[in-house]
Image (cartoon, rainbow, N blue to C red):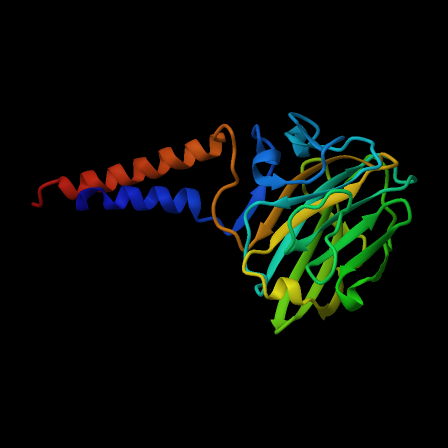
Length: 269
């Protein structure tokens, strides 16, 4: 049994030990298997094209319904982590918004953000060129305006970083950057990001807080979102069909382990 311990260890390390948990929506089932929502109609859906590099993505129907999608995997609320998402605009002059954040609540129909002290998040309004910070107490206020306006038919990258400081106190930094169609980041729309600080008791005391994305596409302001990522979670996103990269990691790990095992079996001179 001892002879096979090295190959097994390599397989586990190569597949499960990931510093960033990213759902790229390239594989069948990425949305429904990794996220939960209470919305019942006009749902966001997977698309085989339209994403970064014309890969898979989440298609945004032009609807008035608020939708909240929470990531099934969780982490302790009193830790540091970041959440990011790529979005593609269509018409930036109409109403609607996109949101990312963290919540201690289960999905609720008809709203984008959970209520009370159990959420922290930020929403982006392309039509007004504003972003708003949401949460308990002082977090319920307008965050500010972009120094550079969003453009139609363009990719952007949203990134929200949480810094748990002590007790119920958090710091938040929000960045919006231009992106090309392949995910290469460009200039900041908020000059390097904006920092906020405040309190939230529900998340700090929760051992299983969840990252989320949500929005209201009333004016058809977005057509796709892609590559939802968060730190603080290990393991690979769930997929109905294993991705090619997973097979490659398994085969590579097995090959390395087999080579090492064979070397150990060779007689010493």
